[in-house]
Image (cartoon, rainbow, N blue to C red; front, side):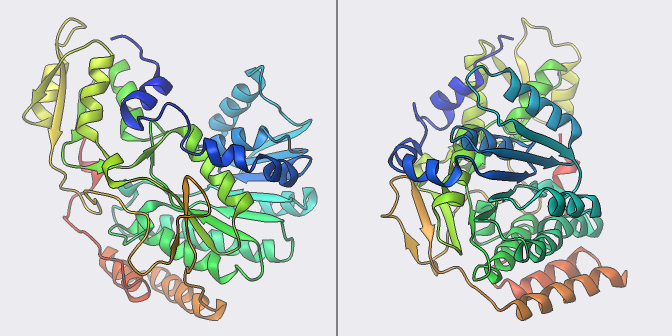
Length: 403
């Protein structure tokens, strides 16, 4: 198997854009970005992941004076530092520090209060996988991270206000069909309740091609281990490159008005099927495939597959909980501005509930989960009570039950 140039493959076969979608907006607003970022202190939470690290690389082009990065992934922080320090073109401020800690822990609060204030704060810490929806325990952990910890952090920020605060969302928050999307939709409502107290923006965007933990990134690992590939044949998604994911978050963070939700302006026809990408991936790698009828057949074939043989791939119709066949960034009730930016749309009328109302919602969720007398359906039902557009798709099968 030839190792392919992943960034070039993304441009050629996935996004089909020779340059960043956001290049024009980056150039047009360069002076404003420089004014808002140069010399400023920056805190990035969840900065070791694909999107967080891409945001860091985007913002470093404008020479902040101080950069602190927090993530629970200690190895990821190490690799981030190696990437930044090894890049001859990368600016890294003299005051650059990484901390392997959870932003919900007491030690984080100690660090934040002692080392702040920070001018720019961005939060990428999130449970982002639909596969995280398995049972009541995994869902409680997801809601704790995506909602409760975000709320506690907002309370901390109110008394230590940054000039800009960004909290990442997801396209799956628009008409959510899975608990991950519902939790991020609830997170959006939480941050909007604080949008009069803080300068807050968020962004929904597409799948990040070959991001950590993604289906496509998993292909590389499967190939190294000579394991079969498994891919949904009927699912299509919008895609952005890792570089683009960082740029949209930076543009939303630095240019948006408080309470705005940003998204990339992508046409429906720009969605790509995972099956098509998979076929292109093997073609670019110079290897044929054999389409298998089942996971068992694919696994059995992989035991005897050599580099000269077709590679076993199992294409299937999706049948797991919480999977949409398509993606969307906004709903019919959203007031959308598509004129201000060439590559970005902005939702202008995100619902802004009073904090008291949000607190009632969160207290009811917390009481349910603390009671011990609940299951997945009870949490889904309570989320639907507060998120009327949450139309949960339940099949009884989790992604963890598949290859």
